[in-house]
View (cartoon, helix red, strand yellow):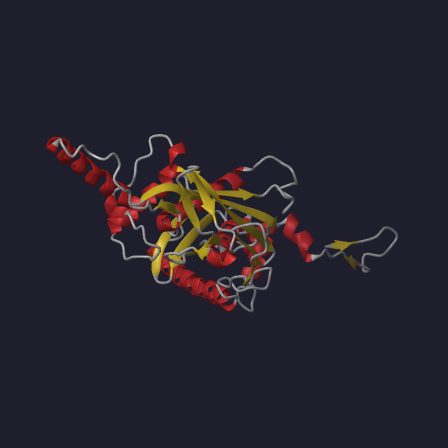
Length: 378
């Protein structure tokens, strides 16, 4: 931009320049396009390559009074996740029925389960609402989420997506959430009349049935996990950060030893930390979100830079600025080499070929998260 001040000759000129942040706010699409088409190769405004993700940093056990917690920072996005276990008595559940024996495991050791058993257990967790996640953004974490403001659509959407992935991945086994009662063997109740043979036979049979029924262990309560994910800072890609914080917190979660007090009809918990047990997580799903930036001759770009064909760039782990420039997003959730879930919204750029590339990059991201959790003892 050239300015000719008043009273000066036209040969004297002054160049007025703005910081890069100003240009990014005034013309975000051309600003991102200029970086992606730079002569040295496509680079994002943050300096990352288009497939490069921000390094996660994890601090587990950040909340002392929670059953499990963790603080996760991915770039400038930071979230703290706290998990609190609450007891839900079966007598307080309307129309509760004891699960079928085929899906029960009263031992404390995990057992190999069939697909049908896992499905029944997932339905049990879902029907009883034993997992209750809540994502909170009204913390002043970004200019769009002021402190004390009502819950936004994004916060409610994130909560639903986290809950759906918890159920879909079958990450948490219902065996870790069941609270069993193991009754002692009952002695003979009313003594039968020895002079009445029929009384002896009937009462003996009834007593045998009662003893057999009393010897069976039963579910008296469940652990209900209240999951709160609080964003301290938000700079794009909230779902990946929220899910990463949840995974780290679940790795840190310990539930106390519990038993059923038949006299008071209450669940009692041991205060000894050494008796607490960790969750037996069945897998380790990790999410990675991509955004597709499309540049085409529709007037969004400078006329001098328009081309006859559209150009597309797939950006991994977007920041807040890049999210405002894309119209198509894809979230891939993988557990090592297995695809757990794929979510896609907007646009039609990503096809089968591109999806394979995204899955391969998500597998690499899974290894990155696995390594980080392994270093902290997770």
